[in-house]
Image (cartoon, rainbow, N blue to C red; front, side):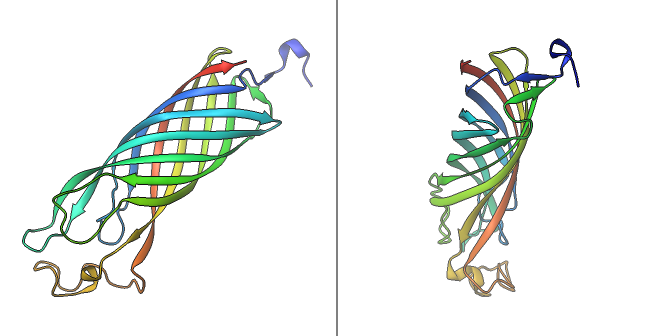
Length: 206
Protein backbone atom coordinates (compact mmCIF):
# COMPACT_ATOMS: atom_id res chain seq x y z
CA UNK A 1 0.00 0.00 0.00
CA UNK A 2 0.84 3.67 0.07
CA UNK A 3 0.82 6.26 2.80
CA UNK A 4 -2.22 8.50 2.20
CA UNK A 5 -0.13 11.51 1.26
CA UNK A 6 1.87 9.42 -1.27
CA UNK A 7 -0.95 7.41 -2.81
CA UNK A 8 -1.42 7.82 -6.60
CA UNK A 9 -5.17 7.58 -5.99
CA UNK A 10 -7.25 10.67 -5.20
CA UNK A 11 -10.97 11.12 -4.71
CA UNK A 12 -12.74 12.14 -7.90
CA UNK A 13 -12.62 15.96 -7.69
CA UNK A 14 -15.70 16.82 -9.77
CA UNK A 15 -19.29 15.59 -9.48
CA UNK A 16 -20.73 17.58 -12.39
CA UNK A 17 -18.75 18.52 -15.50
CA UNK A 18 -19.68 20.68 -18.46
CA UNK A 19 -17.50 19.71 -21.41
CA UNK A 20 -16.77 21.47 -24.71
CA UNK A 21 -15.84 18.84 -27.26
CA UNK A 22 -14.73 18.60 -30.87
CA UNK A 23 -13.30 16.02 -33.20
CA UNK A 24 -13.59 14.20 -36.49
CA UNK A 25 -15.97 11.48 -37.61
CA UNK A 26 -14.81 8.72 -39.97
CA UNK A 27 -17.76 6.90 -41.51
CA UNK A 28 -18.30 4.55 -44.41
CA UNK A 29 -21.48 6.12 -45.77
CA UNK A 30 -22.82 2.63 -46.43
CA UNK A 31 -22.48 0.43 -49.50
CA UNK A 32 -23.30 3.31 -51.88
CA UNK A 33 -21.50 5.92 -49.73
CA UNK A 34 -24.72 7.95 -49.87
CA UNK A 35 -25.00 8.29 -46.09
CA UNK A 36 -23.33 11.20 -44.25
CA UNK A 37 -19.73 10.40 -43.32
CA UNK A 38 -16.30 11.96 -42.87
CA UNK A 39 -16.26 15.40 -41.35
CA UNK A 40 -15.63 17.55 -38.26
CA UNK A 41 -18.05 17.93 -35.38
CA UNK A 42 -18.34 19.94 -32.17
CA UNK A 43 -20.69 20.05 -29.22
CA UNK A 44 -21.21 20.12 -25.48
CA UNK A 45 -21.62 17.34 -22.93
CA UNK A 46 -22.77 17.27 -19.32
CA UNK A 47 -21.74 14.43 -16.99
CA UNK A 48 -23.19 13.76 -13.56
CA UNK A 49 -21.44 11.42 -11.13
CA UNK A 50 -24.06 9.04 -9.73
CA UNK A 51 -21.89 7.42 -7.07
CA UNK A 52 -19.25 4.72 -7.13
CA UNK A 53 -18.01 4.10 -10.68
CA UNK A 54 -21.17 5.29 -12.47
CA UNK A 55 -22.02 8.55 -14.20
CA UNK A 56 -24.85 9.84 -16.39
CA UNK A 57 -24.10 11.45 -19.76
CA UNK A 58 -26.09 14.05 -21.72
CA UNK A 59 -24.82 15.67 -24.89
CA UNK A 60 -25.55 17.45 -28.16
CA UNK A 61 -23.28 17.94 -31.14
CA UNK A 62 -23.35 19.25 -34.69
CA UNK A 63 -21.38 17.79 -37.60
CA UNK A 64 -20.59 18.86 -41.16
CA UNK A 65 -20.35 15.60 -43.08
CA UNK A 66 -19.67 14.50 -46.64
CA UNK A 67 -22.21 12.68 -48.80
CA UNK A 68 -22.01 11.05 -52.23
CA UNK A 69 -24.82 12.05 -54.60
CA UNK A 70 -26.37 9.67 -57.12
CA UNK A 71 -28.52 11.69 -59.52
CA UNK A 72 -29.91 10.50 -62.87
CA UNK A 73 -28.60 13.29 -65.07
CA UNK A 74 -25.23 13.82 -63.39
CA UNK A 75 -22.11 11.78 -62.71
CA UNK A 76 -21.53 10.74 -59.12
CA UNK A 77 -20.73 13.87 -57.08
CA UNK A 78 -20.25 14.84 -53.45
CA UNK A 79 -21.93 17.38 -51.20
CA UNK A 80 -22.06 18.30 -47.53
CA UNK A 81 -24.85 17.67 -45.05
CA UNK A 82 -25.23 19.05 -41.54
CA UNK A 83 -26.16 16.48 -38.90
CA UNK A 84 -27.26 17.22 -35.31
CA UNK A 85 -26.74 14.45 -32.75
CA UNK A 86 -28.40 14.18 -29.33
CA UNK A 87 -27.37 11.54 -26.79
CA UNK A 88 -27.99 10.21 -23.29
CA UNK A 89 -26.25 7.32 -21.62
CA UNK A 90 -24.18 5.91 -18.80
CA UNK A 91 -20.46 5.74 -18.14
CA UNK A 92 -18.41 3.37 -16.00
CA UNK A 93 -15.25 4.80 -14.37
CA UNK A 94 -12.58 2.10 -14.39
CA UNK A 95 -10.84 3.53 -11.31
CA UNK A 96 -14.14 3.97 -9.49
CA UNK A 97 -14.75 7.23 -7.62
CA UNK A 98 -11.01 7.99 -7.70
CA UNK A 99 -8.39 9.11 -10.16
CA UNK A 100 -4.99 7.50 -10.70
CA UNK A 101 -2.30 10.19 -10.97
CA UNK A 102 -4.99 12.55 -12.16
CA UNK A 103 -6.31 10.13 -14.79
CA UNK A 104 -9.84 8.72 -14.90
CA UNK A 105 -10.28 6.14 -17.70
CA UNK A 106 -13.83 5.11 -18.53
CA UNK A 107 -16.09 3.16 -20.85
CA UNK A 108 -19.60 4.28 -21.78
CA UNK A 109 -22.57 3.66 -24.00
CA UNK A 110 -25.02 6.29 -25.23
CA UNK A 111 -28.12 6.35 -27.38
CA UNK A 112 -30.21 9.06 -28.98
CA UNK A 113 -31.04 10.47 -32.39
CA UNK A 114 -29.32 12.00 -35.41
CA UNK A 115 -31.09 14.69 -37.45
CA UNK A 116 -29.90 15.41 -40.99
CA UNK A 117 -30.22 18.77 -42.68
CA UNK A 118 -31.66 19.24 -46.15
CA UNK A 119 -29.71 18.41 -49.32
CA UNK A 120 -31.67 20.15 -52.14
CA UNK A 121 -29.46 18.86 -54.96
CA UNK A 122 -30.12 15.18 -54.13
CA UNK A 123 -33.02 13.88 -56.26
CA UNK A 124 -32.09 10.20 -55.96
CA UNK A 125 -34.79 9.45 -53.39
CA UNK A 126 -32.24 8.71 -50.65
CA UNK A 127 -32.86 10.66 -47.44
CA UNK A 128 -31.11 10.99 -44.11
CA UNK A 129 -33.44 12.96 -41.85
CA UNK A 130 -34.13 11.34 -38.46
CA UNK A 131 -32.21 8.28 -37.38
CA UNK A 132 -31.89 6.36 -34.12
CA UNK A 133 -28.24 6.14 -33.11
CA UNK A 134 -26.25 4.42 -30.38
CA UNK A 135 -22.74 3.28 -29.69
CA UNK A 136 -19.90 2.43 -27.29
CA UNK A 137 -17.21 4.83 -26.12
CA UNK A 138 -13.85 4.51 -24.42
CA UNK A 139 -11.79 7.40 -23.13
CA UNK A 140 -9.75 8.99 -20.40
CA UNK A 141 -10.01 12.28 -18.49
CA UNK A 142 -7.02 14.05 -17.02
CA UNK A 143 -7.66 16.49 -14.19
CA UNK A 144 -5.25 19.41 -14.48
CA UNK A 145 -6.87 20.87 -11.35
CA UNK A 146 -9.96 20.22 -9.27
CA UNK A 147 -12.08 22.21 -11.73
CA UNK A 148 -10.30 21.88 -15.07
CA UNK A 149 -10.03 18.60 -16.99
CA UNK A 150 -9.13 17.38 -20.46
CA UNK A 151 -10.60 14.39 -22.24
CA UNK A 152 -9.60 12.09 -25.11
CA UNK A 153 -12.27 9.70 -26.39
CA UNK A 154 -12.85 7.21 -29.17
CA UNK A 155 -16.35 6.10 -30.04
CA UNK A 156 -18.44 4.29 -32.61
CA UNK A 157 -21.79 5.80 -33.62
CA UNK A 158 -24.14 3.36 -35.34
CA UNK A 159 -27.16 4.41 -37.38
CA UNK A 160 -29.19 2.68 -40.06
CA UNK A 161 -29.55 3.86 -43.66
CA UNK A 162 -32.67 3.26 -45.77
CA UNK A 163 -32.13 3.01 -49.54
CA UNK A 164 -34.62 3.77 -52.35
CA UNK A 165 -35.45 1.00 -54.83
CA UNK A 166 -33.49 2.74 -57.59
CA UNK A 167 -30.24 1.88 -55.83
CA UNK A 168 -30.91 -1.78 -56.63
CA UNK A 169 -31.80 -1.25 -60.32
CA UNK A 170 -29.07 -1.60 -62.94
CA UNK A 171 -30.73 0.88 -65.33
CA UNK A 172 -31.43 3.66 -62.82
CA UNK A 173 -28.06 5.44 -63.14
CA UNK A 174 -26.10 5.71 -66.41
CA UNK A 175 -22.70 5.16 -64.86
CA UNK A 176 -23.58 2.38 -62.44
CA UNK A 177 -24.11 -0.97 -64.17
CA UNK A 178 -24.41 -3.31 -62.28
CA UNK A 179 -26.62 -1.63 -59.57
CA UNK A 180 -25.23 0.79 -57.00
CA UNK A 181 -25.82 -1.80 -54.27
CA UNK A 182 -25.32 -5.53 -54.61
CA UNK A 183 -25.36 -8.28 -52.02
CA UNK A 184 -27.76 -6.58 -49.62
CA UNK A 185 -31.11 -8.35 -49.44
CA UNK A 186 -32.81 -5.63 -47.40
CA UNK A 187 -33.22 -1.95 -48.19
CA UNK A 188 -31.73 -0.96 -44.82
CA UNK A 189 -28.14 -1.10 -43.64
CA UNK A 190 -26.44 -0.37 -40.30
CA UNK A 191 -23.27 1.68 -40.64
CA UNK A 192 -20.37 2.33 -38.27
CA UNK A 193 -19.05 5.86 -37.75
CA UNK A 194 -15.82 5.96 -35.77
CA UNK A 195 -14.77 9.24 -34.18
CA UNK A 196 -11.93 10.71 -32.17
CA UNK A 197 -12.92 13.47 -29.75
CA UNK A 198 -11.01 15.98 -27.65
CA UNK A 199 -12.70 17.87 -24.83
CA UNK A 200 -12.15 20.59 -22.26
CA UNK A 201 -14.20 20.21 -19.08
CA UNK A 202 -15.08 22.56 -16.25
CA UNK A 203 -16.47 21.34 -12.92
CA UNK A 204 -19.84 22.87 -12.10
CA UNK A 205 -19.89 21.17 -8.72
CA UNK A 206 -17.02 19.78 -6.65
